[in-house]
Image 1: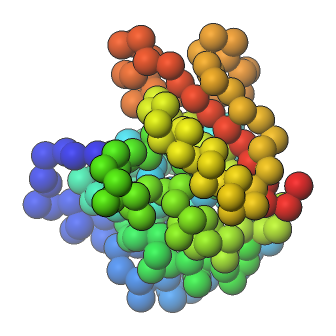
Image 2: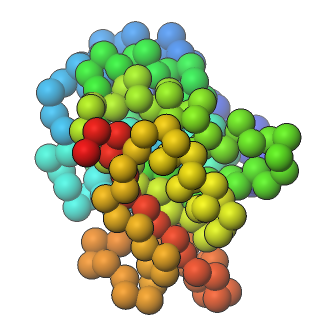
Length: 214
């Protein structure tokens, strides 16, 4: 996701360090350690975009703790705004690569992972950057519970097909495969901003749910 650069973004995010972290060392703060170590049910979204999906979940499920991971500081500002506007206290934001924080998350493994409309990185030489590449699947395994669920949505058919193969080869078993989410839309489906955009242009939305140890 590309947005206009906001020179003030990091300062704004750091003003709310109880909610969002922008440096790995910040995860050592007491408030963050308490959140990570608590025994509450925890879900995580990697690549949260502008935050409609994860903040809607947090509002609907106050008994679940949510972690939003988004690399782009300019985009994370939008997520933080939604958290503050809705006064959500069961969500924390991380503006860092998942590769740098998985050890902290593994302190208390998480129950579910969401991947929504990830960058497809269509060129073969960029395969390792896809969030369903086996390198990333091995990272997720480090901080997810043994029976954790991964939910993946995309409008990109080639990425969806790639993800089915990659996850199957890694050992995941599919709980659900939906080749046209909006044809018979599940009641619990939350449309992201990009999902609305792609769907309005006629794109088909694909979704899968999978577990490593079914």
